[in-house]
Structures are given as structure tokens and as C-alpha cells.
Length: 323
Image 1 (cartoon, one colour):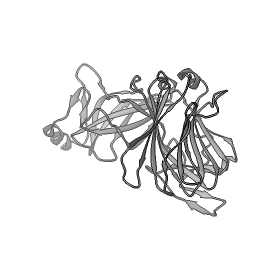
Image 2 (image 1 turned 60 degrees about the vertical axis):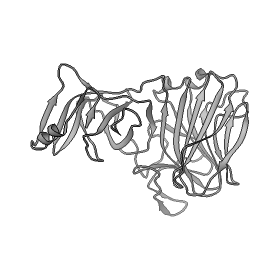
Image 3 (image 1 turned 90 degrees about the horizontal axis):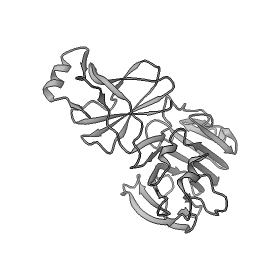
């Protein structure tokens, strides 16, 4: 298990395992978690999100068009189908948006990421041929085309930018999970679109760069966010929405001790109302991935344990959102 300012050797780990509870204090300074470019925008996991409940009203999401009952968190009972919808794209829960529903979430404290070189990534799946859309808000006055991605009912995937318009960037397979990345360069007035067929095992591929015209990051910072629209056909699933920017360091917290109670854990001071997520990387200070561990701040010290299993080679980062 590696930390930014200290390392645990194999011998140290062996010694730690012989004790029931051991507190290893940092010497004269805090051991600070490493930082990376990305933060979680929405992962739809507990305890922040409640499975089976309406998506609107959870973690800043609102249903702006359509019945609130038609935007939910899976696994969930679908009254129209008379059955439980259990599809999950990543982790244990996903968002479920049905026909004629617009689901919107603002930046919720992450506005500083909305500047030049912002990248937005998400997982998406549709249950049939449909018209489903994801785009940046607001749809600025005078622009006929937003910045975003559309699934068309004929099976095409469309990239949309204000000046270039709509461009066919590929086809989708029903019930396959896709990862999308939009990289917006406001200075160059471009948006580059990447796509990966996760189910099919494909690589993340650069498919198109469109011209966004004379818009600025300020246009999207105030009152902006992301909107997911299911216009017709069936329904879509969304998961693991992240935003990143090489010019912005995500908020992190510090921990002072390593706590071992059968397994190693990280102790840190929490703030009431904040949400904390433990991420890990295999020996690198980049490419942090969620471990699935999430804690809600209480104002007291909390301890994270890695549910994927501790390792002497892992680097950990605690990500914080909220106050």
C-alpha cells in the first residue's frame, strides 16, 4: 500500500498483520492522499443514491420534463413493465431514464472544472433503438445545436457541436455499454469525441472533432450542467459520470494514520455534509479507479477500508464532494 509521502514495505505490512489494531502516525506532517485529474460527477451508488427510488431529488438531479417516476435508480420496480429492472452498468446501481424524460444535474460545486480542456466521460446503454441524448447545458441562445452525443433511432451515433452541426460517428448495438468522452477546448473552439464499446471489448477511440464556435467556459459555468434526454423509443441507462481538467486539482482530504484491524485502512477527518470516495491505482499516481467505498461525513474522524483488498503496491486517493 503506497501513500504520496510514505511507503509501507512488505516487512512493515507483515508486522502490521500481527497486531489487532495499529496506528501509524505520520512523522511531523500529514500523509496526504494523491491527486488526479478527475472527480466523480455522479456514480449513482449508495449511500448517496437510493436504489428503487426516483432519480429526481437525489444528489442534485431534477426531472425537468416528464414524469418524475420515469427517472429512477436501478435496481428498481418499473410500474409500466410490472417487473423489476436490474440492469447496472458499473458498481451496484445505475440511473434509469425512460421515454419523454429529461434528467438534469448542475455542476454542484464543481464549476471550477468548467474551463478550457474540460473532459466529461460517462457510461451509457440503451434497451432498444431509440433517440437518446447527452449534452452540456445550457443550450445557449442563438445556437441551433448543443454540445453533446445522440443515439438515433436508426442505430447511428451522432456528435453535435454548434458550428459543425450533427456528424455520424458510428453505430450502436442495443444493450451494449458504451463509454463516451467529450473534451472541450474553449480557446480552440473545438470539442473532440471519443467512444469505447465496453461490452464489445473495443478501445477508447478518437472519432471526431467539431467546431463549437465563439463560446466561452463562462457560458456553461453559471447555471450549467449535464442533461440526459430520452425522447422516444425505449429507455437508457447511465453510470460513472466523471469530469476532469488538467488545469484543476480535484478537492482531496488528508489522513494522519494507517489503521489496521485485520486489514489496513486510512483514517481521515471528515466534514459534516461532505461525501468521500476511496479510489486506488496500481502503483501509479494517475488512472485512479473507484474501489466502491463511500462514506458520508460526520464531522468526526472516519476510516476507509479497501473493499477490493489491500495491496502493498496500491496508491490511494480520497475524493471529497460537498461542503
